Length: 361
Image 1 (tube, rainbow, N blue to C red):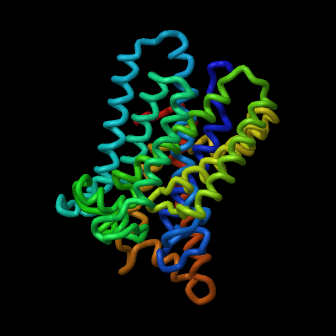
Image 2 (cartoon, rainbow, N blue to C red):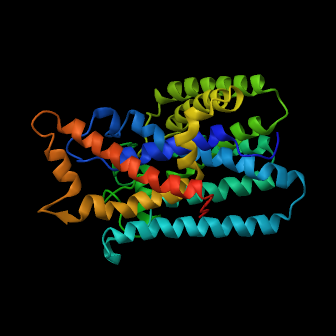
């Protein structure tokens, strides 16, 4: 494969970030359509697909970015230094975003979305540089199986029995000892330390998908393998969920396989439409977002101070907007506000894209 950006992957990444902004910034948290909510505990909604899709793309991007360098014998120590530095930057930005919401060290949450992304990026990058794809398969499998065993078969000390309930499962118990700072839900955190272990497997599966893309296989065979692999993963994930329920909050092994399977299928479709059929216009919005994905995610969080917290006439802008729809459909008003907010962030992303400004945290 030529050393060029894969538009289908940029589009996939970008649409995923746009979806993150859409679900994270509704006009009102009291008025949200069900598909735009996370499952309360066990189960899956479209919103629960977004974060694992991004981690899958992180893994795929690693394969595309580093394959040629590794094959050409690039200095691995130099590569590792850049990887570690990028990991630190992303992690610290994540903590900073948590801090600016309270400006109180006692309320500081160390865990978070960017923090998990940084850890997955670090581990997957090192695995990619220092191991073959067969080893990566074994590592991902081992992570998922060990996580399953500890969560399903070992009694949780706080409960005195095996439990997958909020705050009293094995992940929450381990996090209570390992995770500094405040947890998102007092007794548990969806981006905690222990549940990051299976999240790493999500990134590894993304790397394996990237491995398929960079091979010398024909486009047709690449698409077939991505689709077939995704279908098998989805089926295995569903079957596994009969014993280990699909759950984003504790990132269960079944959740990893099911969501990674869906991601692989969508990547195959995106690759076919964008890079094979050359339907570039369909991917335009996604590519603009994807070119500065993490930067746009951070920007959305910072701009929220203006669009969600700054008072204007007694209430914030989002409340004023949703109030206009209160008489007939506040959920519609909440969705429209979220879409407008996505559009505002797209304008900034487009500004950067047109000027070829690519900020790599």
